[in-house]
Image (cartoon, rainbow, N blue to C red; front, side, top):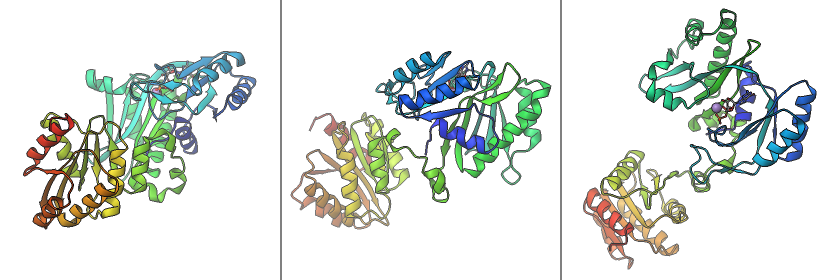
Length: 392
Ligand code: GDP
Ligand code: MN
């Protein structure tokens, strides 16, 4: 689960991690009031920041520095409601529905801090780099040595000596090391206690008067842990998420929308991954990842069809089922009923294997509907690719 920068900064504040003062605004009036307050508190600069669930806002024109109330108002008006395009939003961009209006900082250095769950070592890795304010993926690709790492032993947590080592590698002043260590320990505590999977401070800045601040903050939470964080769950902003994915999550379907035109309906995440691979291998492209789970019933299959059919890019539906817990005849009955009920006109290609597969094939054959069944995964994928191209 993703949250906005202003929400992430609110969390950091609770953990004693320094962030600029600021207010979230959903209207021009709120933005004006926040700017007025910050200017009258003695700030020379106020920053107007678009709040969307994507990075790269600065380059896209979603972060502006204002030196007067009038200037702040001009920026708020232009950013609020704009369709902000960044390298993370895709070409259509994301509509800006909220702003963060905050006190401007006099930046001395832009650094980078990041925490992420490293699956290879089964540990949280704490990363730091002097190359802050730019895309860290690019730094990792072109100059991986510029990213310093400390792996955290989960039993004892981040140790002060590890934070100190990173602080020295960042080239901080001796007088800043103690504060940097407290900053990093605060971040680690926030990361663990909120069950985060990613926390990024980019940039982590030093100011001209020697202070340390989180100027930007991105946090992702572990969806599987949200049941024990009712307060964090409320931070979810559904308007930032893909509407089909939101719909699918209501039915406990594991659905991720992709750019291709062959819809997939599969039981099991591993098989779903293999299905996307084989579609690609056969020369096509998947419109989605969809795992209907092991215990899918007719209602669940109907919901899944509904979601797949609401994607206008979809030209064919590839159902790839290995009957284990889910029996193939039960699945076939559900597919026939759902296809009839929803009057599915698109070609449906199936590959079925496992428990009661013969009964399943018979149900499809006798349904009166036109299904294509591939004998193997590859054959079914070829059929699906051809169908999506309108070849047969
Ligand atoms: P992102 O582009 O979505 O990552 O948004 P950021 O919050 O990281 O802002 C982008 C850039 O704007 C930062 O790297 C800074 O260079 C600049 N910026 C943001 N806030 C301030 C500020 O208070 N003062 C100054 N001088 N620059 C800022
Ligand atoms: Mn940033």
